[in-house]
Length: 338
Image (cartoon, rainbow, N blue to C red; front, side):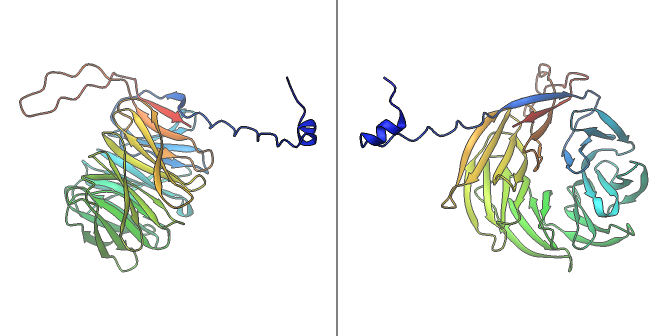
């Protein structure tokens, strides 16, 4: 029998509160068919322009947020990543096999210049806006080249003491970078070009992706041993570690939702967030697809973009080596996850 709320109150009975709204379902909402040949690494989002910059081994594809090709930046041998300086109308690509950085106009995508790095295999690349500098983190060179973003002249070379991986900055002159083979996180002053601190990330091993909550002064480093380390960006103190999936190579943070993400090459996306007491916990593990190991989140729409492809059967492995399955030609696509 249905009893009106007013009658319940008359009878002295407090009506039960309405059930909480169901949590928004999480999962793949779209797959952007892109195609083309070549591998990929770090994907970069220009949210204001509605563009994705996707490194494809020898060139950089420029896409809209529906996967339509808007342009292409050629001649980027072994390209790993792209950094954007919207205030200068410039983009920068790190070319790992050429040991160079390609500079191009954001407005036209025309190449401006290609400059040599001071170390081999430039991998991660970062634009630091407070100092107007560009950092290429050179994996085999175990150092970082710092360029003046306007003149494109080298300002300095910083030894990393190991193989640098992904990097982030706070927008105020402080740069942070993972060092993969030493399991460390470095804090760099972009004004003095000095490494100010080296923080151990143990028990995390082989850190790759890195993200930052600038307002909360927290860093999120992800490692190959299926852990995310949450680190205080001021003291370097390890706040906690959280379980993630295997094969993780990317991390990001959404400042509007407070969610940190880890993209796992096994085919999953880990979401983590601090609760009201400041304790970080895993919120969800969302199925994606194998190979979706890097990612970027749009802070406006809260959609996550993950590049991947379809894979053929792996060939027989040689003794002591790991066999990788080949990419099916033309199958490259970008998953969109809510």
